[in-house]
Image (cartoon, rainbow, N blue to C red; front, side):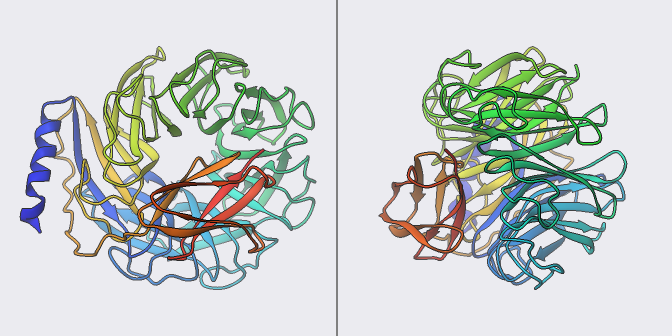
Length: 532
């Protein structure tokens, strides 16, 4: 096995050795089924924590059995990339972890979604259909406390952050009226639902924020003035909490709150088509950088045409929410922006996935399907470099962390095998994939990772979907001819199609909401958000 892969590895080392980039140690972490990373966080001991969802039983790196369908899967790595401990946390149904942070006491806070009643590690029944599930772990990964938060309908949680007072701000979306933990009625369809918890997980306040249409929150952070900013997509015109009309279809929407959850301002940014914001950071000048994806040409607030399909779209707001500049970044095909982080040099680092060849802003071809795509923006808003990192499968980047100047940790998931930049075999279907990326810095002596060679066969029947959210068409890429079905939350089949390689499912006739696309051959399902 080692002899078989030696020429590939030598080729990788040779190529990167003559470039400005060094792809350093990397880890593939997974079991025999589907494992998708939600986020990573650097830890104070020089290691990192990775969390996401897992459908795998004991196999590969996974040391605990599957509880139901998907479970939370949390892995603590030390400074050398070795596993210190891991936890499978779940119940009898669907549990998806989407965010993780280290807390001030050295423990960890997890946030995601659950469709389960009391079972497994879950100690509270569901409040409705889907709920937010918040879990506090101690430094060793033991459960300190947990909270199920929701109304009588659907709540989905994408974001959590520890606040300066030791509590937490939680970012969810909800279509529930007053019920359960929800103290305010829906403003229309889905709304932003923000929850402030104390250090022990007790609710201090909650706010429902939205217009007459649908709003889906993706990120909320505490701001320098002890308030909060929440970002997500909106298709509402002026109504409810929305002070500006829609620019076209779905737009970026940012809402600034004070420390008590009272709205101070909101800002809509978009073009004449779909614009999806996924992340936000506060910048050194007190303003905000919003990041996501756009398929709008020059129109509305968008000052540049798209390069091909979806592009990265970066929008800079002032402290008061005025648009200062926006930048469209992409190649000739689809590029989906997912994550943004401030960097030590005063700029930002952008990450997502790209299927574009060398074109426009993209300097390298993809290796297979979608690859990780990292773009560095300096303090003046200009691109200083960009890097494609990928394998022979679809690689989905979800998180970037800067370790030191020009050294980054990339976290996401992949179904790829040893190919391109990937030096370890697939464990099953999708796996967590964590990669060191150094720009103009060849030193990797501070972290040495031993990648065990697993003999497990690569799953030859997995699939990915895009875009997500989707408006009219969902694209499906599959490694083996399979029957796919679109299922609503009640389990009713709404559409079915046999797909071999690439195909689509038309969702234009379906109402805004969450659905499942299921591969009938394997039983694997993926959650898809349909928006209008």
